[in-house]
Image (cartoon, rainbow, N blue to C red):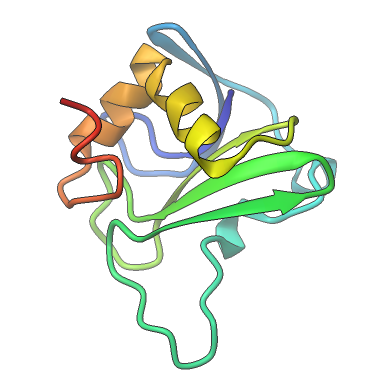
Length: 121
């Protein structure tokens, strides 16, 4: 699973590979992906976005779960974007994210409710 966002301690959005209980910063080039994670979740005209809002996307073979906000950075305009090069239904993507301990730690540390809040236990 890949992730674009902050780690559990510091501000600054980076690309990460999430595996088990670890997150490893990976070299990134926005041109490597058919989407820009900084633009997610997309805001529709007139739509109000709140911290914790979650949107799912399928773009060129990727399944993306974009959450408005960060587990560390409380400024507006932050995002936490989980993505995988595989097409999954939304519920399967949620299960996949929650099955990775470090991803679960990211979700659990978010200081706002998300659709994951009641599923994390």
